[in-house]
Image (cartoon, rainbow, N blue to C red; front, side, top):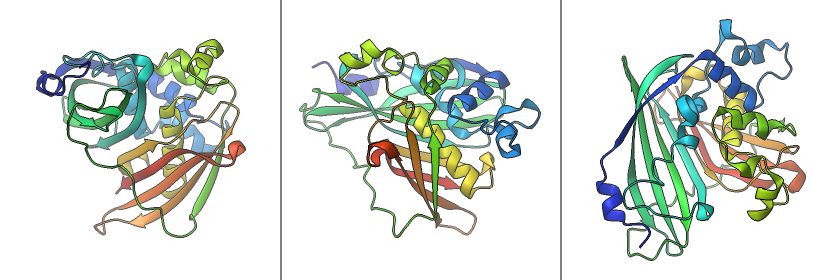
Amino acid sequence: MPIDAVRALAAAPRETRLSWTRKDVLLYHLGIGAGRPATDAAELRYVLEDRLRVLPSFVTVAGDGGVAGEGAGLDAPGVDVDLTAVLHGAQRIGLHRPLPSAGEATRTSRIAAVYDKGKAAVLVLRTEAADADGPLWTSDTQLYVRGEGGFGGERGPSPRLPAPGGPPAHVVDRGIREDQALLYRLSGDWNPLHADPEFAALAGFDRPILHGLCSYGMALKAAVDTVLDGDTGRVRSYATRFAGVVYPGETLRIRLWPEPGESAAGGRIRLTASAVERDDAPVLADTVVEHD
């Protein structure tokens, strides 16, 4: 079998060093559409270094492309798969404290789970990062590998959540620039699917698609700006399931349902994201932001 679950789960964690600067954070923020309007004080906190706040989704590109650039699971012992059969199914990040605008960290990565979905396998890549002051973040990346199921493994949990109740409290539309994927890829995800029309056609798309993690960052920014008064440090965790694609030039519509949390000290935000021009085709689903 191309995936040997026992061997993959038994493999030793991989440890790498990461570093990032304010320039990396600024580039990431621009790549997810921050800085429009350019003179808006609320936007300048993402794009001006003397007042910079780091959006927590930056961890997906921190260092060398972060989650997007890891390859940590796809070349792990026990894993030998065709990259064209791999889809990014879901993403979760958990923050231990607010992210510094520049820093160095040690990243430890391993395959935390392998699930058998019948016609596909799901790999869960667990990454933990810490600096000299202690833990910074944990991220779980779920990769859906078509054609690699049926090996008799555990099916695993379902990420589906009940639909939010009632109409959303907020609806935020974010236009995606024609060149946004070209800008976002400079943060580390060089997949030609997001830039080369010929490659996109081979993958079954009529033009390059936006990175899923770019939509992920755009939706979190909308939640922070709309519900959390722009305070990026209040985010504790952020999880989503990638339900579809959005194209550069389209409009991402983000619907937000703030909800009370399990304690008086925090809460959570349910959200969905869809592509307006294609009859609100789903882009992000089963999405939750937990916050202080």
